[in-house]
Length: 366
Image 1 (cartoon, rainbow, N blue to C red):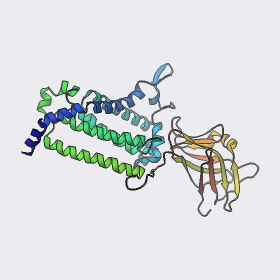
Image 2: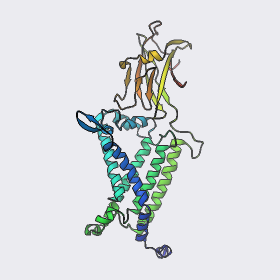
Image 3: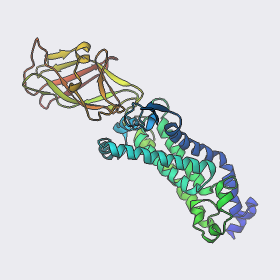
Image 4: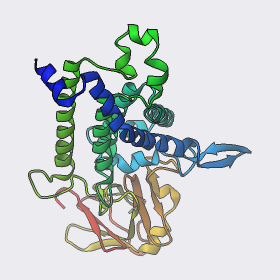
């Protein structure tokens, strides 16, 4: 009776209501598909360079500075729950390349499927989880308007809506799959392609996915930006760089060895270090290095965790050295010839950036 009343109020039986919803969401389906198609096509179609007379896609070339996995090293400091697997992946070149290709082909398939309405529900379901993965890895980033978070929550909501409605009349599903005897005999094909779903199932799914979208939005906003039940305070700062420094070790030759990790800041720039000082336990400067001395560091003095040409790295500049967001390296500063540094513990290392930012570490008891 309730279903009959609902039909009477809308003027449409449930299956027709879903068809109308699919038509209403035609633009949404195309936009979400084009976003994924755009990501894949920018790597596979539009950006090539010549290698030994053969055109190679720059973003898919592991040995090119524009290799797409550079985004993973930028995102690593703020990734949710998957930092250890990401770090492990980034230390295995073959796995990096396989992951990039798998992600790219998934984006390509989802993009084409949504734009043309082919295997629409499968494409939409995959799109939901691709957007969840984007949130987990990149959601904290965004130097202007919480860019990656906004993209991910919007993508999840859009994909859920398309999954529920299917693709409707304007789709390859409806043109080539729906009319076939095979599709009519097997109701499960509606879950992969399009077509009507059981009314009660659709109602429960609609409520469940709606609630999931609400929770996904609110919970990730609170975790990443702390702005639901408290003032805005980002879990990882994406506006200003920070460098975590390990306890400095001073060798017998007076060389100072430490690990540095750019663990926050915008991925669009780098932290530029133009001075370094080693301070002893009494507060006196035991050694210092200016921009010229830091710029003169030999390549062997900076051992990057990710030495690939495309990865976030520390490197020398015209004055000092720099580190992009996600860069991690063991750096060795030579003992000043005029005043060798005595080996031992209790030292504080201080780095100063060109913009006046300072980062320090202190040995236990120092």
